[in-house]
Amino acid sequence: MISIRAKNQIDVWIAKYPKDRQSSAVMQALKIVQAENKNILSASIIQEVADYLDMPDIVVQEVATFYENYNYKKVGKYVIRFCHNISCMLNGADDLIKHLENKLGVKTGEVTLDGLISVKKVECLGACVGAPMFQINEKYFENLTIDKIDKIVDNLK
Ligand code: FES
Image 1: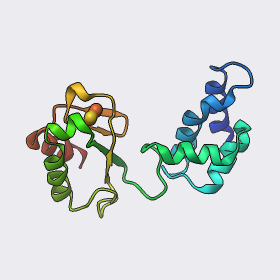
Image 2 (image 1 turned 180 degrees about the vertical axis):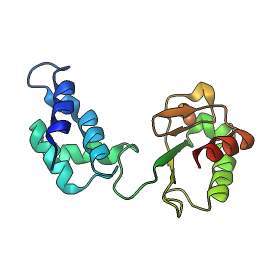
Image 3 (image 1 turned 45 degrees about the vertical axis):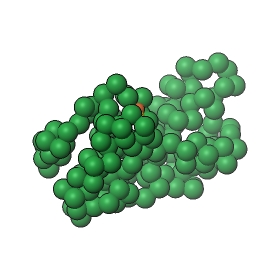
Image 4 (image 1 turned 45 degrees about the horizontal axis):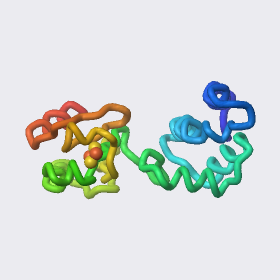
């Protein structure tokens, strides 16, 4: 169930758009309700968001499944979204992702045993000038190297 607090936060986003365009707030609404539900979305939560924004639930589901920042299964406290699109791939992302998987003992899409870190491969995050890069929760890390990754991950623990 969407809390009053979450509805108030969603209303702030709805107010940013013209009247009867509340559907434009769907991405922020999903982000808000996901944060309130242990960082996971479900069919019932998506239905509630659709009802609240007066949208067909299939449209909300399409948004929620298109973007990598929405989760349908348990993720870690820290979610590493590693870009493997063209600029990052050409600058060594594939090898760095393998290094990260080995360091954490997980494959992409999995969560470390302690529940702290999960890794996802994602498409371009719009920071190609800093390739190779990844995002941890809301923060970007660019021009990654093996040493840099080791330091960043060690600081998460
Ligand atoms: S290709 Fe990786 S940020 Fe654009």
